[in-house]
Length: 481
Image 1 (cartoon, rainbow, N blue to C red):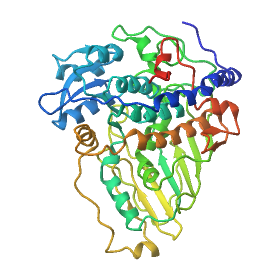
Image 2: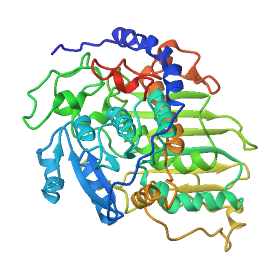
Image 3: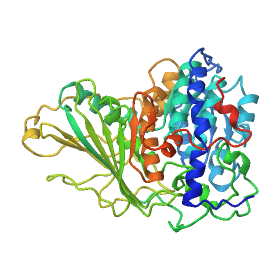
């Protein structure tokens, strides 16, 4: 295996090499535009026949949540590290279920059995698995962020239309209290004329300790016998195995994950993005990139996203903060930042309270300020004259609902509409993809919302596509998807 000794100059050359790939993106989108392949019900008992791709760590949690609904039959398991300690709980729960290490083989062999797929794998691998599943007519639940690059998100939206399957991205709070409350409060006029939003995630999300001044990727180490490393790499650049790429460590590297922004942005900004109709920003400016380097995400980041006026609503600035030492200011009267007890585990344990817990503040032109937490946490009013006007008659919203997993399964059965379907989730994830590009290059980017191009930085524009797929994985990016 060749060692990758990327320097800043080589990094820019590699990014620019994607130019030819970006040029064909419109052709790929056109290829997705026509035709639909409907999935058909394959179970005799009314339950959804479900396969799981990625069954350790977060995949195990998704497995538990899906099985708890009582609405599925588990028909297949897939993991590139099948038999490793973090996969054994799910394996033991399903001793008679077929097991695979390559999702492509599983999809082909169980074409007539699988109805829906849960995908809980590293960010960079979501796209190919989703595309292949939809090609087979399977409904798709994929963990957030739904894809690693802007163009991959675009292609997944197009494939959703072509194949007519039910889709859902795994930002679970988008089917809980915050979803219904935000919708009701906007419709009632409480949330009105939003001008700025602050979102923050200041807990640790870096699990390796590599020096930000490193000049190449880590040297390869022996791969575990349980693991199919070639399938793990999928379409990404070829590299030798290292434990600091695996079991969540991938999140820290630009080419493999989307950092704290991609990980938590979908839990913090999802309802504001949908119900304020934010769409895509026209500018993303990195205000702070502590220990910036070409390999992995900064230790602390502040990003400013600018969204224009739209549909009678004022322009909005969204400021993102992450990093242990990068705590944003909060308004007077903020009070205590609570932790939602339903937040899933982080690196094997519950998220720990920080100086300011994961959350957001929403500022309106009239002076009203709201604060909220992450996932399904509901909003509250920060005390002040404008808040006093709503005292005693806050708009009501539904208090009972199906959870995110039930919502997906009921959508598969035609009983509900999936809340975080790709047509909703992809533009949200594209916002984060643009933020990642600003982090990676270290430059402010100007984005043309009409053409879908970054107009002030050719290198950044090529990163909308990302690296050219590794040999043997090009088929997932071809027009016939």
